[in-house]
Image: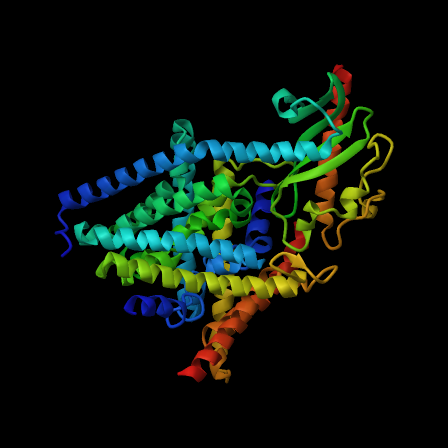
Length: 195
Length: 186
Length: 199
């Protein structure tokens, strides 16, 4: 039960996108369609779970002063692994996400969870935290991508139901900022009512 | 508790972590190296297949360099039926790599976009079946003015993406120059 | 001429915040006051120029000759982290005044994705200034980086100016903070799209 709560907390109470407002760059940069957003979210989830587990396992062996550099190297190694795997087995997704894959390294969510959670908790708890936060991120990115794809190109998960163009502004940069703003407002309204 | 932050401890920890990570990456790299190369080759082969008439050789094995561009000859029982020419051109968001297929008589058989970084919803349409792409099929650049209507040509540009359309047609033009050079050599 | 195109394109057309989505977190975080925004952009410019220089040399004189490009991400982030530390130590010794001004921003910069992002853009992408795509040489890389940083500074300073005014207004409660900031950014991004025609 405790583990499940950890995961749900990551999705709702500590939702990285809607509540903590972390990792904005990939959130905005890769969500031109629902599938792209989901791909980015899952890549981050993978890195987050592995780095959380590794860091909680080695945290006690690392001297205080070189803590951050050590974490960054561990995270960068996992990111490169994701990068190589995507390039080998999902080349089209690799090309769409482009520079945002190596940039998972500096995604504040990953380092943030390492600092705030993984280095003080057990390996299993850290893994659950990683899964929760990663899922929260994936869900947020998928929703954002879904809305932008729906309004901007008139399709759902690549299935086009409106011929011709959508409202292009939603696919371009301004749409990203504005849709995210309204989603945060929506999330706040819904969670405020529950509480 | 975390270890004491003495200089020796710090150097050892960092070196060990760097070493383990590099070794791990080396392993993953050597495992994924072959699939990555295969994926890239498959992409090129698909593009070639889409732009040349039916052939029974393997064009990517017979590639050659002409005028700085890569040319893949397509042959049917030893006779040349067409050429796939890979060219780079500058789009709006960055380089666009296209494959232009010519029949042996110099008419365009088909085109394929290998990679681009154009704006989604606008210039990115260049990778779809759009008028800019279909209108040039079956034409010979030597006899037709393959530029956008804005520049006095006969091709419709993608709405609101003239830069991308121009870049694409410029690539086709470059490929045609390579084709002409090929004809001269033979 | 080529340099002018590089600069205009990096500052206005492909502004790293408003069209490439890099460095958004500090963009939202330290843009409450115009002065802080100026300090942050100065620190970013400084670190970005140095790190692009270092990573460019690392890429073409170490990683490529040795055939270990797959270590790119790991080595770049280490170089940037090391560089930030070094700049901090050197500034403290040489110019305490400058350290006072920029010091608090420096630790934030390691995880500012625009630094690593621009370093990666420079070495991984072919650029299309002028007629043909080509890789940037060292001089162009540094000019491009500084221009990107200036574009960052421009966006963050303009934004901070608007935010100072926003504080004086009565905004619905759910929109306060990040949502309204994002909407303002969206409108700014729309304005910047207008520059698209000039290059």
